[in-house]
Image (cartoon, rainbow, N blue to C red; front, side, top):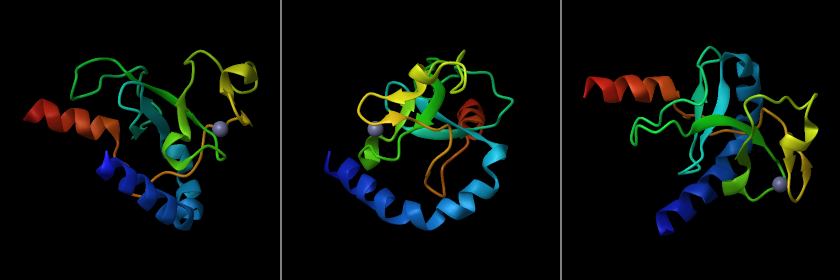
Length: 123
Ligand SMILES: [Zn+2]
């Protein structure tokens, strides 16, 4: 628990510094979230969601949206795969703060889920 807390603190401190850099290549990936662990990853836009968590083998990795006003550890939330913010704003609404976005601050070293899946298949 203590480790998780310090990781979140670290993200809060470093994330804003990289925000501008990350938006440049924002089209190269989508942010996805594991609905079980709440960890986020990058996914290539061609990847079919939900996709497998390489550790559990379960298809719990799905699309995520971002609320900038939520606490640092809880900003990314899973959203329905068959909705868009334009057609279904309700699905992209944070229960506390309102409309979420499909982009937002992520750690600079965030891994591609495809790379993790490949790595685990090799092991
Ligand atoms: Zn929120």
